[in-house]
Image 1 (cartoon, helix red, strand yellow):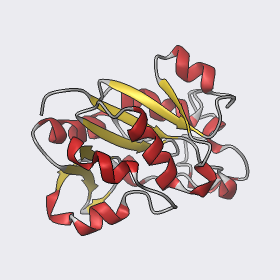
Image 2 (cartoon, helix red, strand yellow):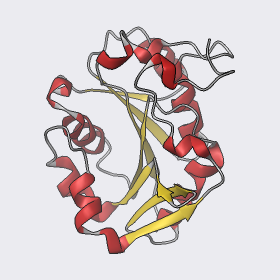
Image 3 (cartoon, one colour):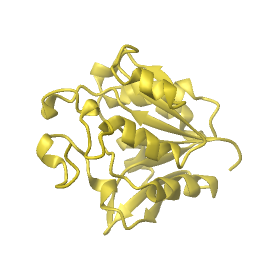
Image 4 (tube, one colour):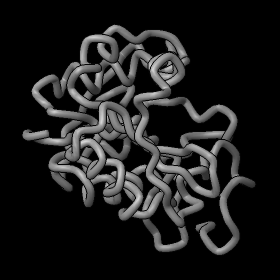
Length: 194
């Protein structure tokens, strides 16, 4: 595959189960969770777009200063499908996308690179696995642009992955972070809490 692989960081969720804006939650090294996730994604992709619910988000300026494109999704309350559609639509010229979640800051750069490398090698869909369990991020080749742009609701791209599971290239990684979705404060691993 020739062309740019774009990282899409989905950061438009409300974080209700966390009890506040979890994207601002500071990790042990002082970095806000969402910024840490974006930095790791940037190490694997040619460029990064961050999907936010509003341009006035407290981290917006920091994302821009780091060189990440801001993508505003006013329909974010409608679910992850809206955010993903906004991110892909704003980067429609990409050869593929690595879609990561802002509340998964512990994914190692090598795991993100493995997904991007699978796309560059011709995979239609790609995802990491840890100890046999599929995790995040998920990679999508350009052929999925129209279906991704049409997404709505809270299922994200699950239907694409389920219906076309035979096309998913699995990338085994030694990285528990690909499974660590931080929904509540107690989901933070010991030693990583700010």
